[in-house]
Image (tube, rainbow, N blue to C red; front, side, top):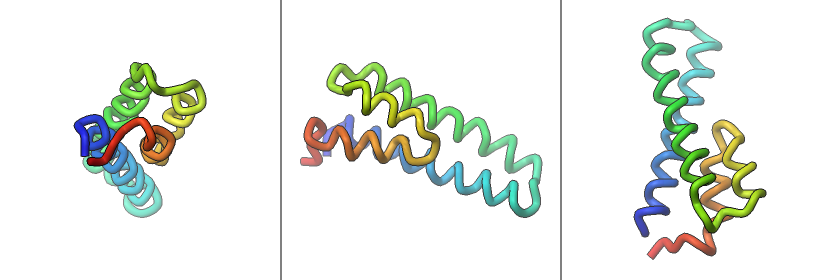
Length: 88
């Protein structure tokens, strides 16, 4: 797996997991410490995916727009860029 593929995979996983935690917290206890810790983590992971995709010269407009979808955008970028990012 190349550095780019690993980078996108980790950022996408962190973004999805933190979104699930935030939504679970919102649906149950709505604990402020959870929100104050996980919220910025989710935001950073989201921005990492978006900025890395928009700076990638191989990404076409459709891939860049897919990166803007919260939660699943990172995994969509991975799928759409799969031919361009090798896993070997």
